Length: 504
Image (tube, rainbow, N blue to C red):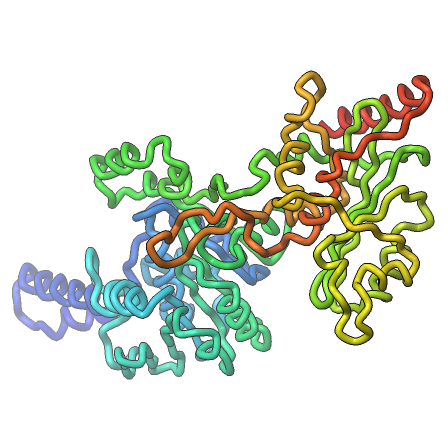
């Protein structure tokens, strides 16, 4: 305002209309050159800035197509480079004032999935040239000292630097530097995220995510790390925060276009993600009938005379897992009540760990992966199953079909074995967290390239499957409960039923 008053005085004897015209031209020039100071969020966007608080390490903006999520990412990244002081007494101050932007020059990375997206969408459209509005990067050499489009780097007069990186350039390109903010647009593979996270560790940096949540647990990234972060957020993790944007809330998208989008995606399994930025679970889950509110029960004391089976999925290296099951007499329902999940140990150590976890409980049958059991150990040439037997666990090879019991396990989940009985026929104690994590991430594999790209391979993906395999060996034998007096069966059945009913 003081600058404008001085200009009016300098204009001397010009008419008031002329003076106002000059000021209007100067203001327009300033808006064009420093548009970020005047950037206006639409109401729903504006509400979300206050959610990016000082105790937030990872801030995720989930949005449908054309919801404005990428524009928010660009605004926050440039604001981080310019610093809070740049916005004081400016229209955009209301969005910046609560952001945890640190003092001093900042090192910012902007990560796109591919070179083309980084160049055309993030740098050229959002930062440098603009499209529907002027660019978010100020066109002022006193603010922005140097721009290197070839290297995707922007140098600010205050010492801050923005560097663009392409996820498809590989993990090695994401090493060495320390970053105050890393903005990741859409979901790369977890290796890229892990490297980015490391870059923020020593300077208490933040990670900003903007994406349409289509890369979910059944496709896309090898490990669904964004979905996992979202699950942690829903379960109360304090330093992770997710917000959602809908294209239907964006006033800059014409109503006729919103209606076209609604018509296009109505009834499609991607509708909630495309329009509302919500995660969708596709049919890629192997156990798509899984429902924690149905299948999980509160732990209860299991009678010592119920048949008990322990099924082991071993590994020479990597994770060895075991699942404990009790078979209810009469109904033959399975109750999975204990788990073992450890890695990078030798067989004797795993055996000790499993026996310690068993805590002296009676076990009628010990099952083990039949293929792995008969293989010979490279050091002593003994069969692997024999190593377990010598370590005190009398394992027998599971009898499985060509699918290693997968179809039988799906039958237990659906209870298609006995149509006259209650559904399902397997229940899981709710403290089996590894089992729950695996079953919610166990998906069908698909072809990722070639003429069959996107088509199912009709077999599960070899990932997060250790307890799933142990569960399948168990179901393949269709275990039956021990025969006992009816009065004892009735008592224990009622106890199991009470646990199921109390949970649901």
